[in-house]
Image (tube, rainbow, N blue to C red; front, side, top):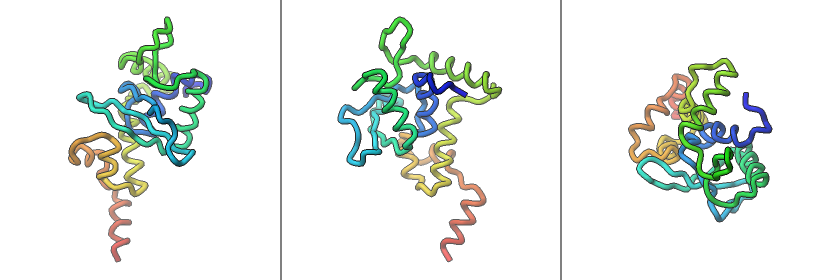
Length: 167
């Protein structure tokens, strides 16, 4: 959908798929860099209400994309997604990310697909992979469990598997 050469455009879309956080919130690379495992990377996520969290990127393809992007840009700190027009270096605005998403979404023939739906997909996939609701809550940055339950409502297959596992 998004050309491989357009890394700056691909990453704000890949982040909700691999992190559960929309790209417009402006993740920042953690200055300390990779974690103890060479495949690991953490990012600072600026959430609602000015809350800042450190979140593990456990999607190796996303980590590789980010590392390639950082090598190509030479950036070592600050916002991951910056304006390149007029090279201001300021974080991409919400409207810029939404416009970018709309352009590629329309080219893919999916005019009704919203960027935020990728966050739902991420949470649902974590749930299907057996990740606990509490961990998903933390990953999404929810203060309370209730909003997370909307994302992780059990499918029939998961409910059946859980009940079978009890026996």
